[in-house]
Length: 63
Image (cartoon, rainbow, N blue to C red; front, side, top):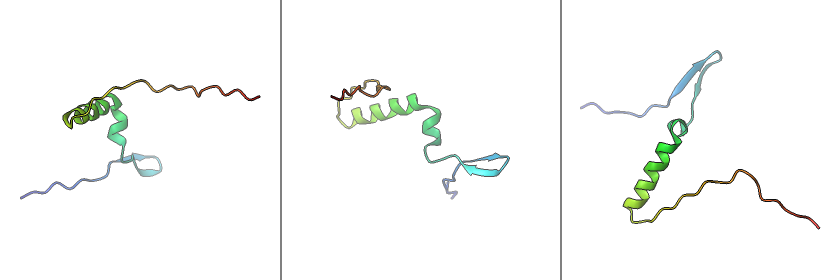
């Protein structure tokens, strides 16, 4: 019986090999990951509502 063993993903550059990171595939297709996670939460019985994250920090007025 063959067993699949997860192996880390590496990229070879001029300095040698470097690990691409545990979230490498998540960063490649973030929309796909979002759809998967929403679907999974809905399967668990949750109602999911998403809204875009604001990129600007709220303005604070100092007096």
